[in-house]
Each structure stands twice: as structure tokens, then as C-alpha cells.
Length: 188
Ligand code: AMP
Image (cartoon, rainbow, N blue to C red; front, side, top):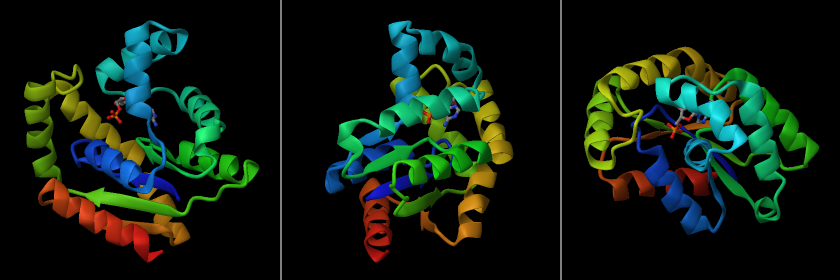
């Protein structure tokens, strides 16, 4: 299975991605986790990404596309993968299309977790209190939700236009949402 999981910040994407990847025994590739790890380690990539991540802005496309190209090229992706947090712009989606045909691995599923905008802010503020993520502050949350609407929403339209997008209701318990996702993934 080669899955792209879409959804706004606060939709529960990371939690669900980890569960789904474990269930289907495929690597969970979270570009957000990769950015945080790079920043933590102080690598070149981390230095490039830091200011963007902390401001709630997107790291430039060319940086992310290189990171994902390298990651998908590793051996553990041969049997499939779940991408969480990528693509986040139309240019990234187009690059992923090209990359998929380059390495002969078309996506099998594009699933979007949907949650109404007014619930997202509360969820993210709560996560900020629990996990202490630097970009879960009121101001940066506003920015990330705006960035999502402007730059990432077109990614859903891109896949909807191709007829590959499946949408799943993200309101409910973690188990309920997981079951909906599994059902959607088994359908195709
Ligand atoms: P996330 O954990 O997925 O919410 O990602 C945290 C932050 O990492 C985002 O707010 C961006 O600054 C950066 N990031 C993660 N994935 C991408 C991507 N595909 N394109 C650009 N920036 C990204």
C-alpha cells in the first residue's frame, strides 16, 4: 500500500498515521517529525527548516521534495509507505506524481481526514499544553491553519480532480476514526 494521508493540523493525522502504518506494516513517513528531528540534531536540513517550522510556515518545496525523494528511495519503502504531512502544496503533489512514476510506485490511496475548522484550534491548543510542541501556541496555530487553507487545501482538490481522493470523518474517538480509515483503505 502506498498511502497519502491528508488533513488539516489538529485533525489527528499523526496519531492515525502511526496506527495505520503499524496495522499494515508499512513505514510511517511524517515530514513534520523529520523536520523536528533535523532541527533537534542541528543538521544542515534542520538549520534550513527551523525558522519556517517555528513560524508555522511551510519549509520551501524544493527542500521537502528532496527529503521525500531520498526517503522513498530507501529499501523499507519497497513494500509500501504511508506519507503523513506530504504533499502540502500543489507543487509537492505534482513532484510526488513524477517521483511515483520514476520509481514505478503509483499511490494506492489518498485519504483525507476531515474536521470542522472550529474544532481544530481547540484540539491544537490542548495538544500544546500536553506535548509542549513549539508551534502549538495560539499565534502559530492561527498561522498554520491559514497556511493550510491557502496552500494545502488545493492538494485535496488536485487528488479529487484525479478521482483518487477519499474523505473520512475525523470527529469521534481515536478508535472510531481508525476504523473508518481502515474501511476506506480496504475498499480500493
Ligand atoms: P506537521 O507535524 O506535519 O504539522 O509539520 C510541522 C511543520 O513542519 C510544518 O508546520 C512545516 O513548517 C513543516 N513541514 C512538514 N511537512 C512539510 C511539507 N510537506 N512542506 C513544507 N513544510 C512542511
